[in-house]
Amino acid sequence: MREDIPEALRQSPAEAAQSRSRWSLLGWGSVSLGAVALTLSLWLIFQFQKPQASQPPTPAQTQGSSAVPIPPPAPISTPSLPPPELLLGHLPFSEAPANELRSITADAGIQLQTAAAEQFQAMVVAAQADGVNLKPISGFRSVAEQKHLFFDVKAQRGQVATERAEVSAPPGYSEHHTGYAVDIGDGSRPAANLSTRFETTPAFQWLQSNAARFSFELSFPQGNPQGVSYEPWHWRFVGDQQSLETFYKSRNLKPGSSAPSSN
Image 1 (cartoon, one colour):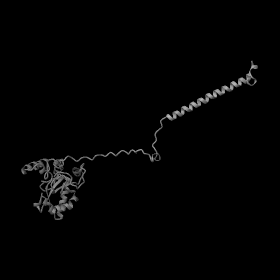
Image 2: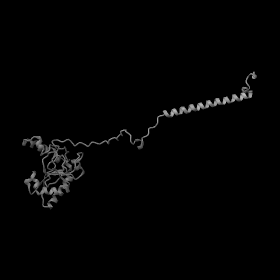
Image 3: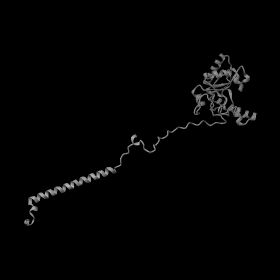
Image 4: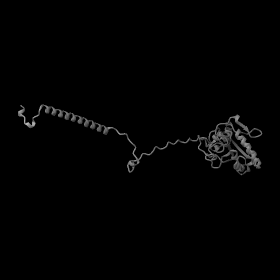
């Protein structure tokens, strides 16, 4: 049988075994290369499909971009507190406790809160040294007294509420309730007391120049925003924390601006 195979193709048993060995190695090598290729292909597909972490663009990347930039959020503003509710142009005030009042006259008929009383008396002494006679006319008034001044006098004069409120606060809405307000006259010019003529007196002129040194300010100058009539005789004490808070707290007002208040 061997003789029938051409000589060039004849293999000895040893040669045949060697040939089979070579083909076996080639076969396993092909399988190995195929496995490597398949693994590489799967790894590349996985890399392309894996979601990439987003990175913020650099200035160079965004330069010239047509994308509209997102502005930063606007700061949140805190609304200011609204002023207390007014009644006929006046603000509500609490009545001063009786045990916090002190007399500023010899007969004890006129009283103020202790801090205000001390400064008022010091102011009177300073004015006397300058030849000016400051005369207290009215200080603390209770809510009951203010009720008489508002309603009874209104009825006697035939005034409507808005007219009366221009010269007198409704009960519960008067600065006099606080014990920090005082009506001042001129002892040498009594005819001008409690009228706009008081502004022509030496007492008023002295107060304009010196009252602030004793922490008193005019409550109702001309053109005051709440529409209360001009009262050159009506002054209030703002010389300690309690009095300052009484007239200015939560009202967005500047000291000395004649805030909406009550007389």
